[in-house]
Length: 308
Ligand code: HEC
Ligand SMILES: [Cu+2]
Image 1: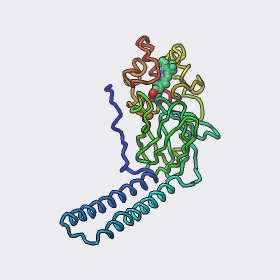
Image 2: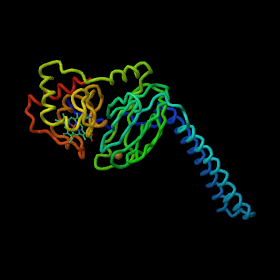
Image 3: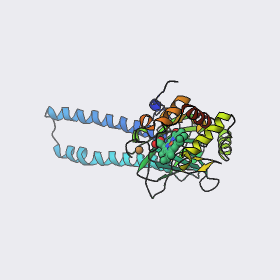
Image 4: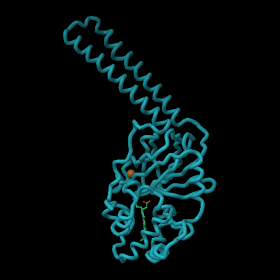
């Protein structure tokens, strides 16, 4: 299968899928139009001045140099403050999702104060419900941003930042780390998946429990390869291992992307990742396993793909 780099996903601030993104787009258009109008007026005044028809100079200076900018800036300040408040406003969240930025992937915990359901590199949101995203970092500063849904916020070590988002459209939207965090920073993306209420609940129920059982003999061998090669030292697979140094793999077979939003999830990419991580994602903090035998690699991949 051909490897397709997933960098041209839908990362678009004008494809609105969230309340905050809508307000931000509106503010951007309003500011751009106002800026353009003022620019034209100022250029007109420059032309007039050139022709030397200005007489009451003092009034131009006070009016154009003091009063006008004060009025315009006060207006812009008020409007953007109102938009900011409505974005970050005190909405009672229907759900809480904790997202921790790591070099160079995302750890995700749904309902962190309750069931604490773990996942990684994908954030599922219920349609039309306000969700509080608790943003943390365990190493350096990262920044959480889903352009279509809106609200960019930093993830700072030792702090918890809160961002409330309300998704307004079903679908898949690309998110990206927006703060330089190291070598693989541009390769630190994720997918936000917006589902209707019932499907969101079903997703959470599905997440609550152990990973799917290995069915075929090949998959059973794959689970052994995973254990024998020390993958369990870094990865959690519910029911098998609890390590959390790398992304949770309990439902890796269900994710649409691999390597924090970088590659399409398919057999070839998954095998390529395990054999040569450094090639698939330079800077990723996972060792490569090019010593695995062909059958073992195929078994491992078959087992991972069955984790849904
Ligand atoms: C030293 C810790 C460590 C070991 C050992 C390790 N990994 Fe990883 N793994 C990571 C880290 C860290 C990442 C995230 C890399 C990134 O995206 O920046 C990762 C990512 C992955 C991913 C992609 C996850 C996703 O959500 O896209 C897969 C699949 C994976 N590892 C499988 C394995 C397998 C199979 C083994 C054993 C053969 C293994 N890992 C061993 C640390 C480890
Ligand atoms: Cu980054």
